[in-house]
Image 1 (tube, each protein chain N blue to C red):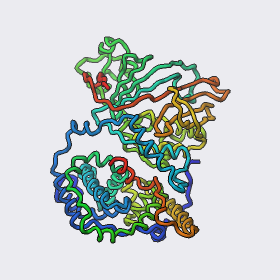
Image 2 (tube, rainbow over the protein chains, first blue to last red):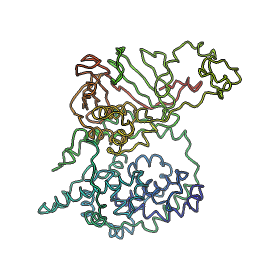
Image 3 (cartoon, each protein chain N blue to C red):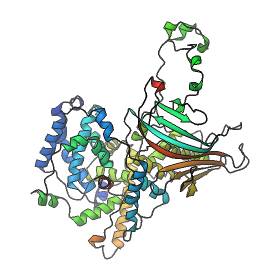
Length: 204
Length: 381
């Protein structure tokens, strides 16, 4: 399949999409907490993959790390990716206003309170730690796979996970000491966390 | 100490990590949305690639002043929230980094130039070095303008003292030979030839006489960009992780120097990045955070050569007895200038010697103007 994607075979590319659209979407939705933005990230990731298809190498059996590396980059700078694919995104059919499946979708995502707590926790991690955490823990990537996706050494993946664990443990301890728990409205929206969201807010 | 060596133990358990921070739900892309995105994507793969002309319009430069206003608005509304602790606090460098990260990204198309204008109140060769044993010539005040392509291979340099008529950039530096009499360059005294056979294995090939038909086109002398000669393209690929960046700098700066010398060189390496506008916001952020990883870096207040006050990031290099300061705008994290001064006695240069007092006074993206020959292309702003 690698060679066919590289050669620009549309069927191979469609196969790539059907195999991995859900993986990219899941990662993006958890990273942003925004289903609509996550859909944009899916589109942008595959538009980038199409643009960069010549760089897909045969190493490894699965194109997963390569594709997720692109998704991570799109999330790091969604504004840049949107600019690059401005016209393609303009041709994307408009999102339906609060469609019928909204309830279903909310049911599948965690409730708002849990999302806010997750956002706070993710916000305590540095960008690199957050990416490694989400790939390895939430998306089930192996260390080698995550290293390939992020373009770092396996040792870096490991050390970032160690740091992520240390920070999350501290956070858990803090929350256990905090009595009673914060009312929902006061959960602080850490400005460092939603790298993607803040980009989007700045470039409406 | 910049690298903290962690004890090698077993890998962090994913089960524990997943307990510490469970995945929020299992977000699923609904089948109808997936089909819609899929069909859109497949239609796009049939579209011809965007034309460069159109692209240039999209990638117009953002004026610096506008950027400053946006960043100020974004950065400093968060600080007044209720009960903020860690996020609104942080070190000055962390706040500078956060502000720099929020700068709009500026893209430079392959056929454009990054333009910078610098003012040197005083210049005496920049950083001192180990081999200094002759007095340096002082120049200044003067202004310098640089145009450089995103790959760093072509450019033009003008300053009011040494190159009033300008000179092409070669390896990031103005070509001194360019100021020679043009006739002298055109006499064809030397040229590139296939192999030493042509010149009788004469070790001093430049003195040999060859037939004109043996002359070849000059070889491609482009040097790959590196930490000390970065280009716009180079920065796009550079790591945005501060710790990785610092590791890379120490590694690539080499192991010949160690201790204070290595730290000071790493400090200079990072500071010089900022002269190459426009830095990608994420790289600027990483570079500012990387300063914190270097021992002996202090943060205060200072003024650049153009009289602008800003955050002064300083390091005293005890090895050569000099102090280097890079200045940044407090609100935007944007680079202002640099100052390097001899402050310790007992070294070659007397105390008080100012090696550099500079300011980056303007930058923008320029389209190519005049194109005659490759090396003669003086861009217009």
